[in-house]
Amino acid sequence: MTQIHPTALVDPAAELGEGVSIGAYSIIGPHVSIGAHTEVGPHVVIEGHTTIGQHNRFFQFSSIGAAPQDKKYKGEPTRLEIGDRNTVREFCTFNLGTVQDGGVTRLGNDNWVMAYVHLAHDCQIGNNIIFANNAQLAGHVEVGDWVILGGFTHIHQFCKIGPHAMTGMGSCLTQDVPPFVVTSGNPAAAHGINSEGLKRRGFAREQISALRQAYKLIYKSGLTREQALRALQELAAQQAHSQQWIALVHDFLERSQRGIVR
Image (cartoon, rainbow, N blue to C red):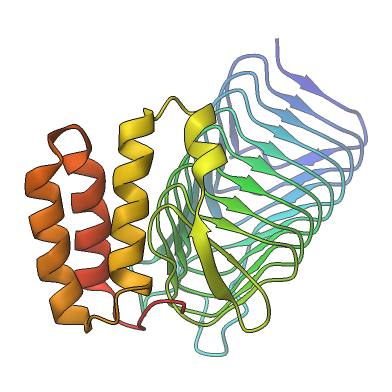
């Protein structure tokens, strides 16, 4: 059964699934939908047009679904969408989207979000991501699956972080990070591929070796962007066991608008 603490304020129009629990002094707004078996701790505010999936856990003092920190926002009914099985620790802030973009901020499934993380308006966040304490994402940032963001990572608006990438503590990113690449520093610089993370996720030795070759083509060969794209296509044709992963790197590099971290 749904459990609502007597001191919580839950709008009658809010939709709460089976087994949802709402902690002391938490506030749930009228346009909020919370899926089954999600736990909302004490002193959490969930507002705006916010949809939350199942089996999530929100720790105390987070602000979820508040208006975007964007001076152009005029109260439009934009949205925040959160998937399933996410853990959101203390003092996190997730904002609604804006009509200047797709109108929705998204957080996928199975993400581990530590304290003081900020997801600004229109961020598009994938699955199985770890956000260490104080990771700060500006508006319109995209983060792919299985990324690890080190503590105090700061990401400039419109940047894209490719799947399986990793940032070191205190990284400051103003450009895109290709898939599988490790970055650190302020400004951030590339430092090889996330080989240890790939091993833990079951990537074969041959696949990791092929991705190292792709990294060298981009960062160590002195090739121009166009030359590197052609070289990646040739490498993918030679590496049948790693073709999809090299193609992922190629497509990311081809679509990058801000340029990549060097």
